[in-house]
Length: 359
Ligand code: ADE
Image (cartoon, rainbow, N blue to C red; front, side):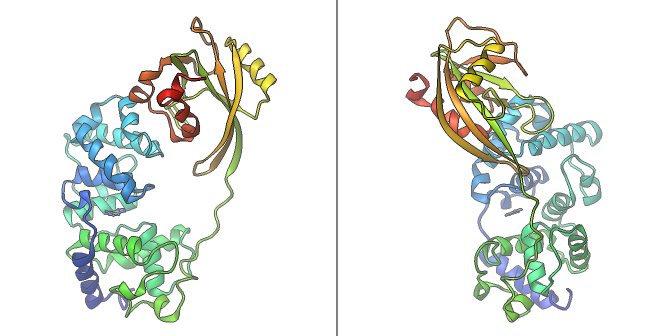
């Protein structure tokens, strides 16, 4: 690798970054807290989608102490729509341990950052290099693609040993401007050496040294073993309303969508009669039950295939003996107070605006 990324090409990469980098909010700061928040948000979410969340999050939690002290429900509300909620929970766990064990100050080097919840090799490398210019690599999916193309490697980028080999090779090359160097590789992967479609090699500062570009191998590299297929789960969702309130349940503290609020739902595709029986067994007496649209939601390892019923109940109803416990929430509070995961967005749209009162 150091034949390809020699002093001249590292210089060319940094010059390109200085000229071409996108003007992103987290690039205006060296505050490790802000960089940490941005890197966690960026892990599974696109840059454009992260921008408004980043601003709102920092307004609500401007420092480690405020993140450590907000309630879990407030935190999940701030994260609502970003998905992968374990990222938010780990952020708070780490913030609490920074308060208790590091005097409220984020650790100043890679090794110590690695000890915090949710901070793996990539994130520790990104924070330490961007905030402190520590010369450590930050190898994410973008960087894996750039580096394997650069050196013409057919190694499978889903294998840990591939990443380790590239990290080790990169470690001896990182210049003093470590943060800019790592971000330049990320930027190149996001804007030039792109994941979908043909890379824009004519714009690349490394085109003269890139093996894949020279030999026409960009369609073959990177090599990526196919993922195992997602498990399909059939579910029946209930939109239970009494005219002014809607039923929500809180999910268990562990597992998929842990601790979030959801529309009541159960395993399987229940036909109308079975659905009615199911609700009655839980003490809910439908005045009217009507099938509404089907929906699909894709998680990392699972796909939910949902059918749903809109269920009208009496305004008298105030109890529930089912799994997790159900509460009837005034429609006006549904979106302001509760974080309802986007898995239910096909159905929560029925609760917005005038539709909330119809049916
Ligand atoms: N993706 C991950 N880290 C990033 C960063 N610092 N800037 C832009 N995209 C990123």
